[in-house]
Every structure is written in structure tokens, then in C-alpha cells.
Length: 282
Image (cartoon, rainbow, N blue to C red; front, side):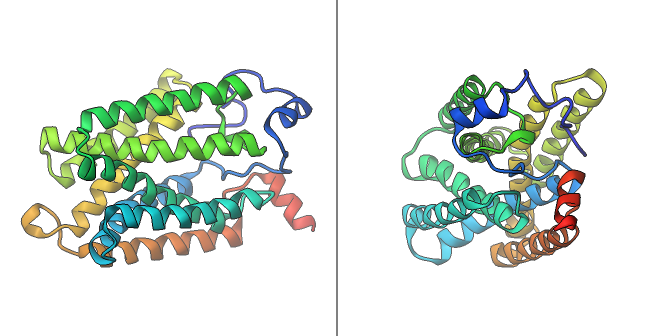
């Protein structure tokens, strides 16, 4: 399922390459983000599931406490993002490693506020939504676009990853808030969020909902969808899950992610035709 196309993704005309490079810093040769294909959404949901189960696994088994685990994963994320920023084009392994780690960190940020600091989920959900809105506002004010088809400067890439971080934090808080208030259980929660994503897709394809906003709304909603699936698989049967545990669930989903990333690295099915032709010409 694709929400954006190069023709429809721009909210308003982008600046010229020279002007954008002057504002945003170094210009990469190619876009640093994959094309939005079915592979993108499958891996994204799998990463959000791993974000939920891996955060629980690390917190329960490392003995570092929530704060210690958060610091450790933040350091690993910083290292992955350094690699990501140093690339000059989209590299599936580096990109999806960054997404997987940022999903864990986003989950831990929300969990720290709720569990360690006692911040109500209504408050954290509202704050994350406002922060994400500010990120989008500043991004658009500086770049005149929120399209992921133009992540080709260091400035735009910084805005992109900042937005991604807060979509994970917002999705975590909003998902937990909904589960706590409605007490639907993991399976029904997953179905609810899947239907919400389907409604966004329907609004985009039939009612003309803007491609950029369709993408980012769906991006936020995939976080609680993946978390609900992860909890359903990993939690004990007495709590409404299937009882696979966080270790089995995390390893299973990581293996699938790895397989898909290797496939995309070899086939380059999630890059533009222009980039494929350039790679073949080398």
C-alpha cells in the first residue's frame, strides 16, 4: 500500500536544490528514505512490535532498570544514526536498524514518563502530540515540504528522524491510553488500529486526503498496532496473550525483519527506478 507518490507528496513547491542545500546543509545525491511500498509497511509494523517486546525484555532481564536500559538503547541509537547520516543514499540495513532502535527508544521514553515519573497517559499523549506538531511546523517552515521523497539533506534528515522518534513515543502513549481506558485486550486493540489505518487509506484513495498527512497518520497508528500484536504474542495466556514470551517473539520478528532487509538489499525493490538504473550502471 502506497500513500505517497513523487507527484502528490509535496505540500507546496519545494525550494531549489541550491537554496535548500544552503539552508539544510550537505545535500546527498539520493533520497535517504525507502519508497513507501508494502515492504515498508510490513517492516515498519514488525519494528514497532520489536520495539514493544524488546523494551520489555531488556527491562526485565538486564537488571539495569528502566532508566539504565533507556540510556543504553539511546547510545546504540545514536551510533546507528551516525552511520545513517554518513551514508549518501538509502541503505536498507542501516536505515531499518535505525528504525528498530528508535522504536525501542520511543517506547522507553513513554514508559519512563508513565512508570518512573507517574505522568498520566493523557498528559504524555497530549505532550507528544504537541511536540510532534511543533516538529512538523518547524520542518515545513524551513523546508516548505514534509514529503519523505525529499529527505536528501542533513537538515531534512534530522527533521525526519526527530518526527519518527515522536511518532513512536506518541503511538506508545496513545495505544496504552486506549488499552487502559477501553480495556479491549490485545487482539481487539490490534483489530481496532488496523481498521483505523484502513480508514486512513480509504480516505486517501477515495476522498483525496493529502498524501503526506495520510502517510504520517498511518505511521503513528502502526506503532500501537505493532505493540498490540507484540503483546498478544508475548504475554501470558492468563493475561489475554498467546504466551510465547518476549524472547521468542523478539527473535521471531527480528529474523523476519532481517530476511526482508536482506531481500531488499539484494533486489532494491524499495528504491526508485532511477536509483536502480544508476546502481546497475556502476
